[in-house]
Amino acid sequence: MTLCFAAFVVLTAPVFAVTLEQYARQQPLPLFVAAKGTVMPNHVDQTNNLQEGDKALLLSEKGLSDLVGISRLQVIDEGKPIPITSVRRLHLFVNRNEISELPDEIAALDNVVFLYCEYNRMSTLPRALLDMDGLEGMYFTANRFTEIPPLVFDMVRLKKLQFSKNRISSLPVEIGRLKELRHFNMAGNRITHIPASMANLKRLRVCDLSDNPFAELPEEFGQVQIVNQLRVRNTGLTRLPEGFATMRATIDVTGSKIDVAALPPAMRARINKEKPPGSKEDNKIIVRKPQE
Image 1 (cartoon, rainbow, N blue to C red):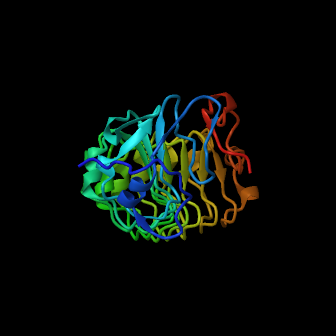
Image 2: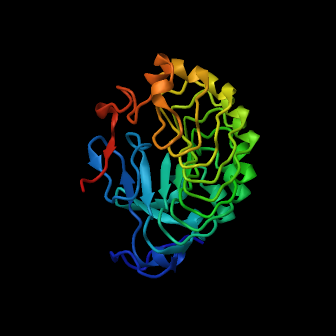
Image 3: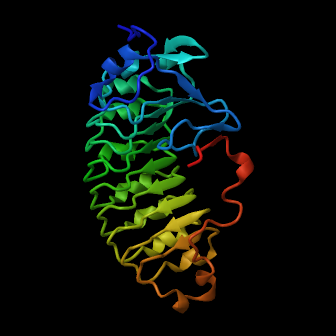
């Protein structure tokens, strides 16, 4: 059965939890189309991954309690209802809702390239994610995870992965299987040990391990020539792997135990809170954030 709309009534975000099916019956679900110079219509959804022509379904801050029926949704594209599964390069935003789990039917959305589920109530993930062949990135900031679900380490095509602000205490050696990662964010967890297998993540552009209690980084990790930035703020670090002195990225050690003045000159030159010049090329930004 296809979910349809009883009426095209525009409602404000609900103040109580509703199911996706209830929400979809009350109003249309228009797609946001990324084009040069467009502005994201809200302040909570990020714009970094949107490319020219990409389309996004914006379901953040809607009070959603679940995503049952997601595979049968009709969305509005250029004024016409179409199946959600037919949208090429779809970004699915469901941030800041009341969602505790993803339904198995999400496997049908192999057209989704980025899945944003930040600030929800999830602690597990379904194996159905392995069937989403187009998936390039997943964002689970501020949920209830106590571990990275093991199935994630089988998703070897992932380029971006974010589990910041959860309750994760261990970073397994299996993280080294995700060799395509460009962006990896584990900030704000309870991680006490960084495995040597991080050396396999040789395509990293940004890595954020801040606000975790680990006290050292493996020397092998120094082999990774990170491109833009390594963030290890508010950790127990007292030193850095020697290999980091030759990478392009800057290293933010704010709040750590590292004595910057005692570092060798080449390493000291890498210490900075900002990314290196050229990391944020304004002319490459497609969708901009709304002004405050």
